[in-house]
Image (cartoon, rainbow, N blue to C red):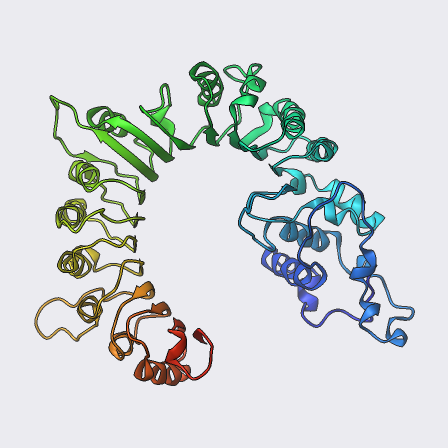
Length: 508
């Protein structure tokens, strides 16, 4: 193990005495950043990595003589907090498709590595059941089966979060490995709190034992069931639907109809991709009294004889995310909804054409909702400049704090958003603090004029300038902003915009 001659300078003595939960948490984070590096690919054979954690590799021999072990220096609670931070927070990394077993889908860390350091860490890690309460298996191998068995055993009676993925190109022996892993996981079904499944048809028979009430603690599910038969799919989902604690559902594959039997009334978060009769969709949506988060990509089949055009008010929904939809489908959705508590709206792909109808329906929807929107995200390439300007400068967005746009930002749009002291009437986005412009097609100097006008409110800026071949005026102005306190700016220029080959300036 590593040794220290005195308490590390980056953790105060009051923290070591566990003065507060926050101090404990911060100490764990600091220590984990120093003593725990990026996790490597997990193997099925134990590896002794204790030498890599010895400080005597970097500290003169004389300093490390007759000094206490770090295990004796720190209380168990702090070491445990270090472990939890390492397992769940350190080194987030997007899924790239390689075979791995980790604590969750966004990381490459696990408690297994901690067990390879020394016997003390192994004993301590095995004693902390929360380290083993979350499990992610992607592209499984037969060597993972005993690790999964160990993992589930060490989780004891903890509620479980499971992410299990097996894709189309899997070989026969890999499918056999997943079958054994699924068998182990299904035996823990009463403890499932969150379950995410991305499984092929070859594994659809594994869930026959699940019945109503089998997943009695389930709060959230996320399913991608490729080419499953309808009966097998219904059997699995009915077991999920029966949980009285179910609140969050994510249906990631397109279906030709809304999921049947879903307990809409008890849900607080729904992600849905489907084709649906418009009247059926809004009838179901009107039942979602508890809904707070809604993410949809829906293709409406318009009823030949619509029964109602009444407005549906969802009084708890504050976060609306919309994926790839036709402009007509956007209009259909916006024209039927009122969301008075809406705070966040994301249009991932905006509107498919330059027709103003989509933007007009969005403005009418925001006005009808009378909401205090705080975050607006919009992407896409086809747009009507005048309608974009009209939407961003309308009074319905006057409460906006966060703005993220990946649509092309022209000189006209940037000038329209430049803050002017209102001598007559309204000035756009007066509360704007954080902005991201991913595709600025502006002329030199337009951006610096814009940011100068908002220095009193804006606190973070991320901009990619892609219009002019060079930006000498903007470059010089950004350099002077180094003197501005409490503002963080990231500007990505064309390579030829500066004499150096750097792509961006990072100022804080």
